[in-house]
Length: 160
Image (cartoon, rainbow, N blue to C red):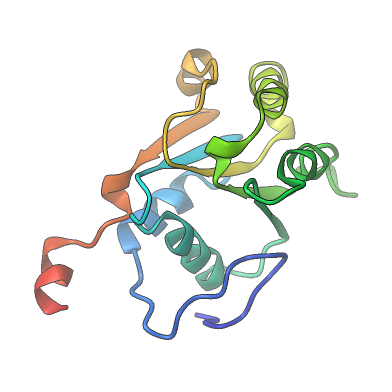
């Protein structure tokens, strides 16, 4: 694991970082889908869990967008606008996705329903986003991972 390094805005991991293998396994399973949303309350470990997963993977081009920043919605739309030279959409991670504007969410909803092959998004949110997701879920383009994947296992809590 490349602890202490950042890639395209990915947060640094603390020196005493505890891996989240359950979350990582689920993220690995959904990494090629159009949209994966990690939903859990504040402090559950979503951001560091995702940053740890990215840090332990083979280097992949990705773009980390902080929706809480002043240009978050604009940066999100720009990052998801065009595929790279090989026609593969960039892997975009959006932290605090619950803060995305209604316009950005409409843009995402439209793309998810009409052109899911143009997206590879990992959204980190405190609550469910208002997206039309039934058909994308049924077609395997959308997955929601709940906070139970962010926490520690019973065995790890006892050891800690």
